[in-house]
Length: 290
Length: 223
Image 1 (tube, rainbow over the protein chains, first blue to last red):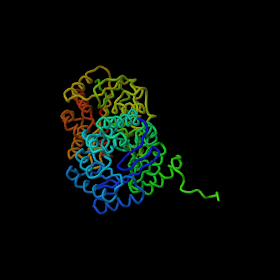
Image 2 (cartoon, each protein chain N blue to C red):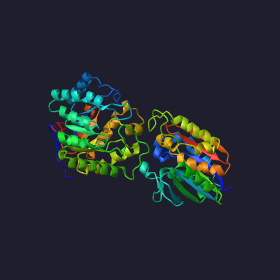
Image 3 (cartoon, chains in turn orange, brown):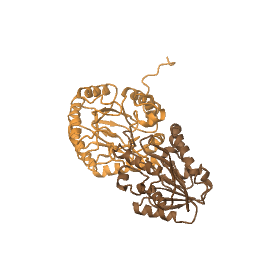
Image 4 (cartoon, each protein chain N blue to C red):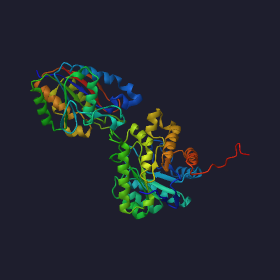
């Protein structure tokens, strides 16, 4: 896999260009925001704010990732389809991602204007790739260690967690290409905490360069996750600084897309890292130079 | 009297301090209870460590590792033992039974076969110390690794009482399908113990019965 430009919706991201994805949940029970953007108007406001704060993408979720009340496909569609269409009307150039594992939802949200399908459950629905291929959307290929959707890890064991992640996500990416998904719209995501204990998620963060070396653009979703919470012994509301540290290390090691709750903080960190990496110039350097 | 004593211990990876990191002290009491139980086996001629896993026998030199759970430094030899036996080996190495010659047996058979294996062990000539590695249900609470099952607590309480009373009939009658549904890893090893107890009248003592992380842990001794 050669390094290439990532194309999502009307946007293109070069290999040295970070893309920031803001999380906007349409769920009443998300682990982090506990339903703050469940209501439609609050969700639109959150989108507007994310865009103003520097988000390149928004990721819409209609089903809580972890264990919780069952959400039917009909209910997931009700929470996402019209909302995606509404966002598209308000923000023509915003890249819209939808976090779903159901091919039926993927197809309908793509018709409504979604550009990327974030398949967090690693191909649990084998038809999802075909929905993405047919609609021309991008696809996120995840690693969950064989877990079923919405279940938690119990004593997950890997000879080498990084090798397992690379093997699984690149196989899903290859399968997506074979199914007709655009090669320049595919991302791989190690999917921290899903099917992994804290030590395993830390190892993935530490060795993220090995994922980047596959050539596929790497998405990381570390924001406020439990591996940060367990490492620092902090509850979800107090993991912001830890999140930025994990995000920054991931960016330095080659991750390209960052799924976050706190957009301004992540934007600031990524803008600095882009300069440190030589991919961008400082905004202005006057000190001691006049 | 070929089986001179037996001990029952749980096998969460979390028992290993390097896996638990800063949470290690939370299980100090469980580790201490396990080591105290295993001490009863130190006068045996042969230590048989029995645990859940694809049925197989391993000799005493078999290696194990906690690298798959994130603690790369805690290992011995080339790793072949399943988790239950790896925890068993790790515990034995720290105990007074470390010097006793050892074999390992993983078992995932149906009830009748487990009972038969237990009776065979009991019929041997060597003075055997039996270490039985088994966990209760992983579905004990709302915050369990696997979500709460309404029958998990009564299942574990039944096991705890049977261990305390060395009641082989109750252990022998544990339903394998229910145990699978409840994700109780100890069913097959406990039923081998039941086969042993059918032949060998030992007295049970339950020293630990709790589910601090939503998984049932038991420590018991049989002397």
